[in-house]
Length: 180
Image 1 (cartoon, rainbow, N blue to C red):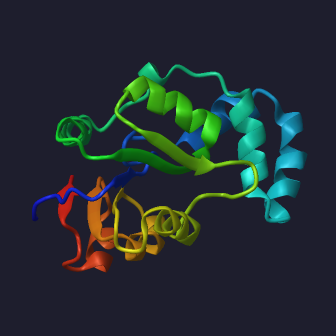
Image 2 (image 1 turned 60 degrees about the vertical axis):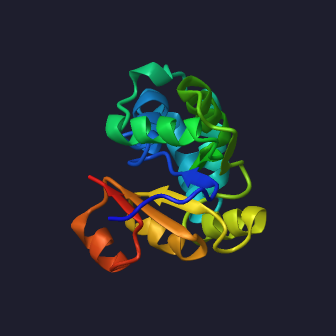
């Protein structure tokens, strides 16, 4: 669509930087082999403590970030943005220990904002946290899902990556860039 700005850029993880969802990876690798964890996780979910179960599972997850499938075109663009001096952070609802491992592997992020066992950093919570850090409208946000429709209103630049037609349509003419 348009050109990128030089605003600090917050990048979502699941479905944006990587073409999978770390919650699914975690459930496959941690919960399915240990079904006795399910009652506790369900209890945490029912009582509104999703960040707590993400923390517990994230700390048990063993994975190699090199094995994940990355959105190569978008990642190449991010590397170019980094070369220009643009601040790029990973901002995800995934558990912080998982996000930090991926950020270290990718090597372009100056910081990581993620769920921390108390706050589940998704949707409006993510937008508010970014606005608190940079000021409303003073950052760019790259995301992909309908959940990001609650984050994008806080951003000054909207970058859409690998989104459904429904999500793109909901944004109207607001995206600055779209990566298919």
